[in-house]
Length: 597
Image (tube, one colour):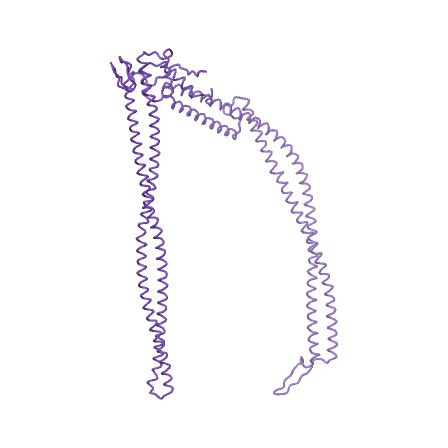
């Protein structure tokens, strides 16, 4: 049976029934009072799960190995067919490449010859073209020279005395002798004009020749470039074909030989015992190992899951099955009537204990949740408190800065008012000095006065200049004081805005957020304390109930209530097992689990 087919609840129930049927009163009582999974039930189940897990592992290994080997065999067959077809194709391709290589060699020889001939033709045409260009340069120079001579001659004919040789006899007499007589000049002019016309006509013919030769040169150059391009393409194709013949196809053949040798080795491994799986390629072997590890890990997880489920339900199923067995006296264990009643009483108490244990878990879970919430609130409170402290510590600094700026503004205002007064006084003094200087100057110009009084206008003018300088300096001081005050006021406004925001946040923190958090923390602490008290009460009640269950024995002479004090002759047994020499969880020798199928 595979692990996936195992119903763990049925196995635990079957094994529990077997343990109950083979146990006496003292062992059954011990299992009840221990309140933990029954080891005599779990040990065989653990062995059973391990056995089936190992069987499943081996089955998985065999199955995956078989699949991998079949896949490898199919892959080898397909690869062999593919390599065979590839070899046929490449042999045909090799023949074509060699034929093409011979054709390319002949083509390259022809292109070399054509390029050489075309290069000679191009060089010849280029040389002729250059010679025509040189001739054109000479003709242009000759035309320019003839035109220049003709212009000189025309100028001399129009002004016969302008270009002659001049001889000067000092000191006053000058005589001019013309170079040529007018008939000779005209004859020379006609000859130069004919020469110019001849040169122009010759230049026109030469221009036509140059254009024709340039067209021929361009055509020869295009032909030469085309041949070079064809040669370059042929050389590239030749190199590519040569590379295919010398490198690519031999490497491909070598790879096919390697694959063929590997296939032969794998085929030989298939024919014999292959414990190391040599019939698999390295890649497929690694993939198989990975798949096996994954499947084995999943089987181990499934086994641990089933064992965990068995451990969780073992004691509960023990209570259920024991209660059912105690109700059926015919199929029950071989115990006395008093032992049966005692087990029923203990069983009822243990069932109540299980319910109380569930409540205990719920309370403990609630406590953990409340502690987590309390920790989060306390962390938030610490953060908000630090934020409030930061706001409070930053406020005095800004207030102190604003106070200093205000005092500085007061000083600047007083300084500015003083500078304004000085400016006004200096302005009036300047006006008085200038006016006095003008008046004194007028008086000195009108009346005859002692020379001493001539210093008065200068002194008054100097006083006016000094007063004007004082006024300008006072104005600049007042201007800079006002600018500094404006900057200080802006900084004060900025600090006040920051203070208002911080005070608002600090007020919100101190009056709303922090008190609310403190209230929530206080409420949670009360609830947590109540839950802890409830948990302690629950644990105390469970302890009392367990003590009562431990005090229930089979030796009594009258009736007894489940939760009341027993009456009659009661003998109290210790809660520890009665048989010290026996193991706490004895194994069942030779026992097999009955699935009930």
